[in-house]
Each structure stands twice: as structure tokens, then as C-alpha cells.
Length: 168
Image 1 (tube, rainbow, N blue to C red):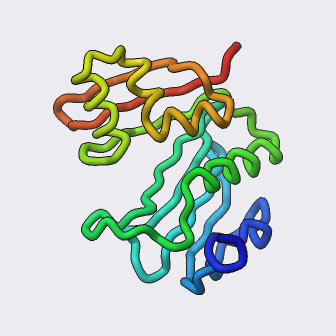
Image 2 (spheres, helix red, strand yellow):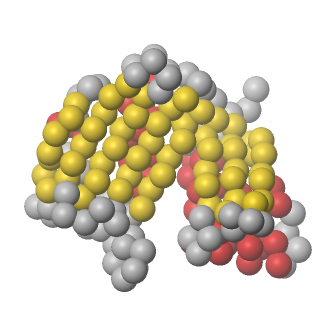
């Protein structure tokens, strides 16, 4: 809700480390930076590390890791909106000269994406369609990453790695 919740993205420059105040009044730790191998954006609730939004670019691939809900209570963070964060991160990186052709998603066991994917697979939906039906698949498509490059199910780790890519 603009003016009352959210992250004031206009206060964040291309390189920034410090505290910002979310629309709800919560204090957030923010780090935007780079080194010789990657560039990143990290936003975390100062008082509760269960909430975190992180995205980095390595090569031409965006690697996001987003936790907008408390893993123990399920409570949503009032300032963290994953779709808006991904769009912001993508814009921030591309406007600074990074070409992003892929988005990698990791569906952790128990996550909404993981559960949605497995429900679809149990209904005999093809793997590529099953990942497209997840929240991550829908957002990737909205952001222009409309093709599924790979799906790796790891039975030992109980997670699923998916890479979406832009069409050639």
C-alpha cells in the first residue's frame, strides 16, 4: 500500500549500504553492491532475520532468494512484496549494464512453489507446465522469462532447481 507499506525503492541508489525505513515504520537493512564476480541487492528486517529479500546476478543469471513470510508463524512482512522486489532488482541491474537472460529459482521443501509444483505433478501435469503454474513461474513469465531451460529435482535435498530464460 503506497505511503503506508513497502520499501522506498527511490531512496536506494545503485550502490548503497545502510538502514532504510519501510512504509510500515520497520527498520530494514539494505545492501546493494558488487565485486568482480557478482552484483547483489539484499534487504532484511533489522529485528527479524526470518524476513529477507535477496537477488544477485552471476554471469547472465539472476538468483533471487525471497522470504516474505515468517517460516514459523506464516505471518507476512508488511513491507516485503516479492513481485515488486524482483521487478525492482531486475530494473536496477539492467539499468546498470547487466544483461540478464535467465532467472534461477530454488523451490525449498515446504515452500508454496514446492507444494504447488508437486500437486501439479501428482495430477500428471508435465514438469515444464507444473513449474509455470507456480508463483515463481508466473512472475518469471511476467518479467519476460517465458521459457523453462531446466528443472532439477533433488531427492536427497528435497528441493527443486528451475531455470527460466528469455526467448532467443
